[in-house]
Image (tube, rainbow, N blue to C red):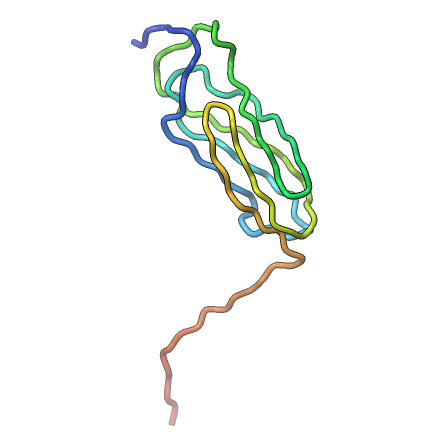
Length: 123
């Protein structure tokens, strides 16, 4: 059984994902942040602030005077960005952890075929 303690947990592990992974201007973009927190007072909200070239996501966690269970706790939050213009964006997460990722939005999906060096000879 875990002991209660005051909020102030930290991330044990964290991920930052962009959906879809190769977005175009036609795609609604979602950012997913999650992982394992060191206590039960996990982040419960993502505040989003967007500029021309950056998306800043701030994790909102419970106040320091909240009592939490001392147990590793999975968590996941989504930020719906919608459609973005063509360009390169910096996705930055702050608040209890710091992570960043570059997001490239293209005008259309780029198809790269698989190329093989194998040859077949037919007579």
